[in-house]
Length: 318
Ligand SMILES: Cc1cc2nc3c(=O)[nH]c(=O)nc-3n(C[C@H](O)[C@H](O)[C@H](O)COP(=O)(O)O)c2cc1C
Image 1 (spheres, helix red, strand yellow):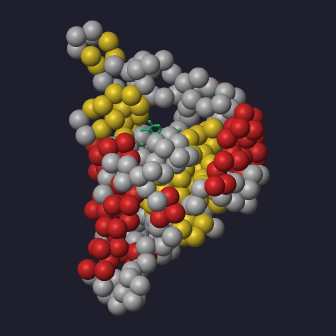
Image 2: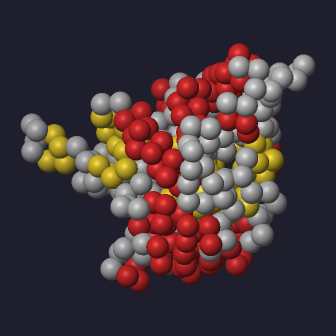
């Protein structure tokens, strides 16, 4: 570990993701934080890195039939079904208020065709209130029998390229853990022009009610998040960090600074907190404070000095 004298003002936890300079490496996960207004009474939003907004699609979506959330041991199953007002209403009614946020605001784009990704990215990224775009590619492609973009290297590449063509803003592509070789997907997405990778989205899962003998989610299957998936997510970051040079936003079950450090030591330059906010709305502050203490106790000047430190094959740039 690099031993640097921490400056008089304390160690820096600032980081850089693409063109975004963030004062703290803590993003709030898409679909888990709204645009931050419900959390503002509990957390100083100026102290977080940024908010990744709920994914938006070309057309409005009502989402899946309830129940859409089921608690599982150390985890949460969700099958929201990308409920959102569609890009037209979103631009008209929602985006203006994001200008008030004292942190980075990252728009999340979902789609069901390559054209959807290009269309929604172009329109959302054109707005000044949006600092960067995250591409949620964990969606089925209607053009290829519903194959998930994030699970097919060719589709992942096409969606990334399409979004890259229409914006110069920072483009983060969010990978799925539901693949055999996540490093292979990461490589094609990097080559297609992504500035950063979010690793990972939820893990597929389901739960069955033994009394009714029926699946507990209205949609039958869903995505598992929370502490239960952390070891899966840390491994994914570890593997991706050996395969690409672009920065990684690690996520999956982060609740405190030690959890965040696992991801950072594996090779993530930033982390995202999703489900952890549901049990502790102050988690972003706890994580940031804990990271500073960890660095100060070891006299390390900057968080950047520990990125990938546990990963001998780390290929990224600190
Ligand atoms: C209720 C819920 C809704 C979510 N909605 C989205 C979404 O709209 N777009 C997206 O990219 N990820 C979505 N996610 C995934 C999270 O952003 C995050 O990547 C994942 O839950 C893993 O992190 P966590 O364990 O910290 O929650 C959602 C997760 C939850 C729990």
